[in-house]
Length: 529
Ligand code: 3PG
Ligand code: CO
Image 1 (cartoon, helix red, strand yellow):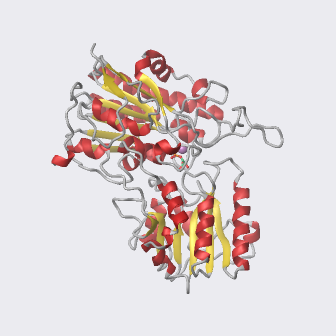
Image 2: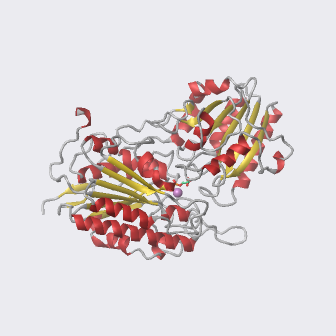
């Protein structure tokens, strides 16, 4: 295990329990009526901000700081938790697919050659999220892929679209469908039989995650594979809705993993009991990326995923750190799977315990905005008080999940609930003499309105504001404290551009270790007091 051994920190002790709290969708922004965190009563988070200036700061959570193509890309949970857990910035799926398409390397890979075998006699089905959100997929990548396959022998293409109102403005999908229809019409002029074959809203079909509700994937299966689609678009109405049959090729064109794992299992696994597939066609299936590095799922893919290795979780387990991780279903994989570099399962089950609290299913979270925040808080509290763990890590989903519904009042309730859960955890840390580190993965609830360049709410044609359901470009807070924190510990002021990837080294320090040399630098220093 020598390669995993972390050096002792010269000044910081070991053995303090550390709570690592990630508030999902909790950015820092100007205080106005669209800032739900500002509107909500959040005394705990407020006190961290006001308390000790050298123990509260902002870090970057979007764009190149988390491996996205540009600083116009908002943050998201996948790249955010990857950065938090891995301590380094990896070029992420969005960027890797851009590069592979730009260089044409995507067409030289094993995955493309594999599906290409079906082009002569079968149909190519493309399934994925149709938007320019850049979180799970991007329309321009789909457009390039369509062009690429059209130049490489494809005869029939069926696009199964999932529409988006979560990473992009509600109602914007009409425009994306028009763009796609135009492109498909051009392909038809070239003699390629290319059509939209099925469609549905992303929260209703296919894109469930962490096995919250297999019915979502089943509804997609019925439409895409069995051809029993109740959803049809105007110009696709006369088109025969092409089912997926033996000899076809299928590509799921999302690059992001969490909401593709379930459909990938249903398309790939011979043995499968999550719902009745009715038919299991013999197809050639490839993901845009490989979505799960541990399961090697799917086995064929067009672009290699980022190689997120040597994550902080793996290091710490090798150094004897006993870890507890918890969230509710809809974010459970964020503090486990994403945290560990898109890898499912434990590193060492003797030292780790991952607890999933079942999410409410079948509702949109503005109906129950408190979600399971208090239950997560209780589980974390109990884990802390049990003294069985060195690191207690949670994700509190409220700001993000309710923020995505665009319901401002509910989001205010959500933020208050998350703050209450933070208090429970901090109180427990106080009792055991531990340390806390509270941060977030990206912004959402702090800004609920689309803005113009000057920062004022942008009005639509009717002069109304447009509610922002998506994430933001805002930085997120990070705070440290607790009775176990050595008195001289403070945030350095020579890492002004620090981002989420700097957190892992910071956490390792708090555990009493020096981070590996290639990790992004720590945010803290110890001054003599
Ligand atoms: C989702 O998948 O719910 C959104 O597209 C992104 O949200 P997340 O990055 O916070 O999970
Ligand atoms: Co989100």
